[in-house]
Image (cartoon, rainbow, N blue to C red):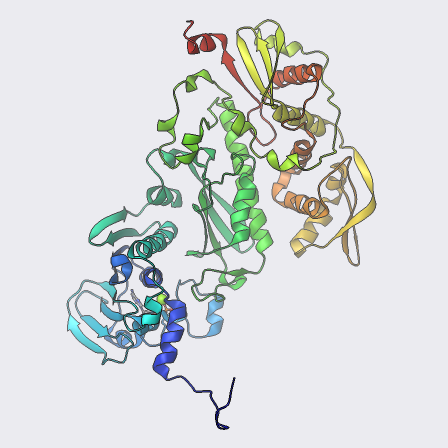
Length: 596
Ligand code: ADP
Ligand code: MG
């Protein structure tokens, strides 16, 4: 910084310039107008909200509502910086449940666009404000007519700030950002009727519905897909969350349809997105992601919403508790859902071909290729069976529990198909067994996992003292309390932990344990969400790591024995709920090659 002729070069910006600069943080593009005006309409308690944009929102962004409306006095104040009816002091943020609270949106909109507001509190007296852009024009307020509610219209955004206007994208892109913002709000407020018009055409009509799940389906899914959407609720200390989650039928190749909301605002929160993914791990084909949304309702005193200009980020006092509750809820849900469907012989989703994967947003049912009837009851295919195993492949898993199979496979006879014949292996993953007039195709990893799992639930898990104990710290008192309370049970599960002045340490782990220290600590702390099912969860975790992997080749004798034992299981599902085998009949094969 230089000083000319000994004079200061610092200048205090004229208020008008300062306002434009500050406004740019709040309103950086038309979608920000949509976001702020929608927030205001929702805060005003509206039941019906209409959005209309022209030329991607650059020419016009208008939102009409039937909410509380404003008096003439409030209309005079609402466009001033820091004018708000929602809080009176900073401390009010501890309890504020409104979407807005900074009192800067209308002021910022006025700094960057021409603004018109028409409002009435009772449908009798109505007022119209016209101002801007920049707010240096005389602000006119005149009487007009309007039903109860408010219309806010911003025209020609950034006309007065060419430097910013240059940064706008093409109309189409700005329009889709506006639409996305609209969808974000609509997803969170399912009891409001929404209409979205773009260049005069109605693009979305989302009538009020009683559940988040229905709104999600109406906003984002194709006909038929909603059959595979579920809604669950979880509760923690100071928060509750509704979770809408799509079944594996609706998998996507990216995370674009995974949404996180906190008190009605869509936020970017990596940890909570991960919580959903973590909870659904094992149910989705490798490299794919679930669709869904977390609607977190949290006591405002446990979250700071005031750390981001557009409120896209939130700081939670205890992220890990929320994370655990969400991932645990999703995990338990999938487990239950597919165990249930196994008893009902419902068909597990199919992933027949790449085409379907690409187009998975279309009607999942309509796309099943011909010939699906070939596969029955425990219908699966190699892609699905391989779900979630890849990550273990490079795990160098040394945990090896010998295959102790029952000598006597008499219960095979209960199939009453005659004698089982070993028919070979396929794709480094499947064991083939011929039994009567059926060919059974058995997922070796899933089968072994289930057999080990049953064994671990019956017998104590072998333990190994660590030469170098693993020290670790917890993140919350809750975690400490959990470890204290469950120390005995953990020891029975092969995990010895001790507490000293500096924190916790792990002294023993199940024999041949192979996870990294940090992953081990995470796995142990994750048991918090398992509740009564801690032993089952733990057994599933270690079995998954111990079982033979895709591509591992046990010898034929072991493979045959494993296959036969798999067929005798009373619940032929792996501990994560995936089916262990599928079958195909001789007739179906003969028909397929037109011999029948
Ligand atoms: P904030 O929402 O943070 O309070 P805004 O600048 O967005 O700040 O709005 C200022 C005030 O104008 C609000 O507090 C509210 O009282 C009023 N207001 C804005 N939009 C509406 C609306 N659609 N209906 C009723 N009142 C509104
Ligand atoms: Mg606002």
